[in-house]
Image (spheres, rainbow, N blue to C red):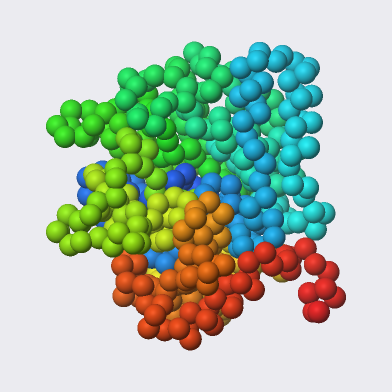
Amino acid sequence: MIRLHSIFVTACAALLVFAFTNTATAEEKPPNVVLIYADDLGIGMLGCYGQTLIKTPHIDKLAAEGMKFSNYYGGVFCAPARWTLHTGMHDGRIGGWKQNQSGFLIKQDIAGVQEPDYTKNFNAYVEKTSVPIPEKEVFMAQVAQQAGYKTIQVGKLDVGFLTNHDRVKRFGWDEYEGYYSHSRCHGFYPPYLWRDGKKFLLEGNTDPRCGKMSEKGDEPVGSGGKTYSQNVFITSILEYLRANKDEPFFLYHPTQLPHGPVAIPELHPDFADHPTLSLAEKKYASMIKMLDNHVGLIMQELKDLGIDDNTLVVLVSDNGHELYYGPKPSFPKKRPNGEATNLTDKKWRTSDCGDVFNGAGGRAGLKRSAYQGGHQCPLIARWPGKIDAGTESGHLSAHYDFIATLAEVVGRDKPTGKDGISYLPTLLGKPQPTEHDHVVINNHFSRMAKTCLITNEGWKLVEIDQKKNHYQLYDLNNDNEEHHDLAAKHPDRVAALTAILKQELNSPRPDLLSAAERQQ
């Protein structure tokens, strides 16, 4: 009897050791990371940020189960926004706006160039026009690779406007699928896409311009081809999750949605018979719904695979809102409430200019503008058991903070010299040991509102004309819509912030300098 009792105790002890070991192993398993990077998604297009006409239940649920940022900034345009995300540097640094052009592949397709000349010409063009990658450069995906993660990118392949296999691999992606060319991304029905360096054809798509629609958006629903690119991408993403659920991965999905011109295989039932929306508006709303549905599919797959609790999911947009559903209305003399607009300072406001969706949420500016509507972006993060549900943060942060955040999540040091600061402490409800004094957003497009600097105190300096020393100043804590220029009331503050902005613009990249050079 004693011997049996001894055996029983020994067995129980062994089971306890086994259970403890398994629990420790489960706790130590590195978290997966999923980054969903929307294209031209205005902050006002999501229900959790105020949208009422279009329902976005899956993204709203992401916010309800995680944290929503209210003071987060992207770029003002596609390529620089992606450059700052991937490099961890603000785009006022040298090189932030040095991008190649993307129309070469469409020209080759129109001309009917075949292999081997197609690949030969393509690679030669990329080599000739692309900015060389410094040997010291460390990109976002490489941080995850160095931590032993599998990495995959699916969608609008970047950095820049045009890339190829060698460059995508240099950026740190073990696997990838999507468009090499941003010009081709403006159509949703490409004849072919790339997967790990090889073309694959899409059934029923023949247009070299990938089914690109007009800016009017009045083409019939389903025009452009048979196989819609975003349906290809979501299928591949779900297959990847199933195949890699047992190993830590970093999945990056730079979707085309909801970048225009508007195109959709079918109208969403919420809008198909809407009595007042135009056809273009119905299409755009359906694109937003597809983005939301795809987020829902990804989240459901994570749950079905049992890896939901160990996965950090982040959703963000590259830049601000753009009007893709009809001609841009003329600047009104009066706002809807009868208040006169300032005709000497013509800031676009979707709330003033007839945008039925008010995609910028009343903010001044659109994509390509250094006003809030051009670069204040949604950021939502969910990580069950780590991020408190239903929380919101006003922590000042920007795209270039993600690389530092990713490094901390996967257990690596932030690459030396990067501008970014990890916002993981904020996500976890802990004090931020370091914060930005300011963030910088550069803009080479506009003659007005070219560049801006936003301080941690909530002041925003907007450059109107540097040569004429013309700057505007806004108090974002009380005027996030930028109605009231306070520059005349605070000349000393304008002078101090102008000096900082000038010092930041075209500044060298400390991450590419040697230790001795950084100390000089």
